[in-house]
Image 1 (cartoon, rainbow, N blue to C red):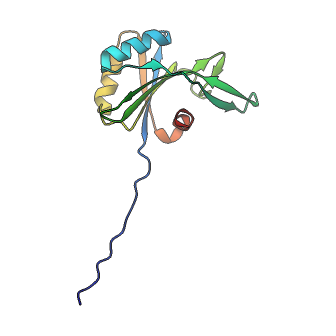
Image 2: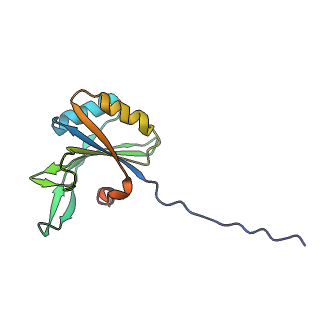
Image 3: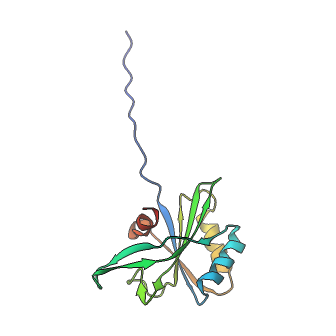
Length: 142
């Protein structure tokens, strides 16, 4: 009888998401239009808002966002305004006006996407962040 082969099954963790911080004076509808034109996507305002507990205020605060799900490539795009109704989503990043989040990005190379975002007139700066610094996606997908 031959030697028994041993196989080890490993499951990958949930794929990380990409977070881009955008500084611009554009209102949300204008930035959404610019992103749709540049990236060939169709961001639309989500019907629901997500609630986030604000420890400083000791209460929950609702945030609206824009969403596009690419059914073919299984990529989800989110655009979230950092300051809504006098509250900051990420208080430690007040210089960021919007967060552009891509989950399961199989459609845009990060370097190319960063370059495209920086080409949009009206965008002052674009920053990349490590996804581990954010728990935003948990609120959006729950």
